[in-house]
Figure 1 (tube, rainbow, N blue to C red):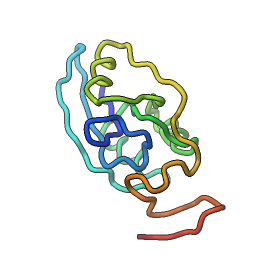
Figure 2: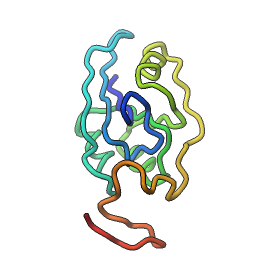
Figure 3: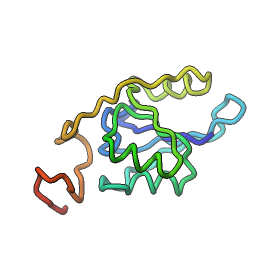
Length: 132
């Protein structure tokens, strides 16, 4: 299984789209066969799900994500596990053991403003469109 973890330093990022990077891991026979860290390609609607899909990711692990992002992942057949916090290594260990359980998404609309990577295209009706 190939999984992506929204990453901020050594921790699972609370905001999936704005995280600085993604830790991509391949788990084979209960062990990590490969691990790499990729920079976030940018925060715009549908970009990250497509990016991770092209990398062969089957599962995204994060603190939270909005409903639209969850929909994009569902369309691509990628399982989203939200409500995860703590150290990346702890999340990987639980994933290996099959004990990683998601919970309530830590994201509320607009909650990630000012954190990590800003959106390059804003499509919320109550916010101004802006490009960087």
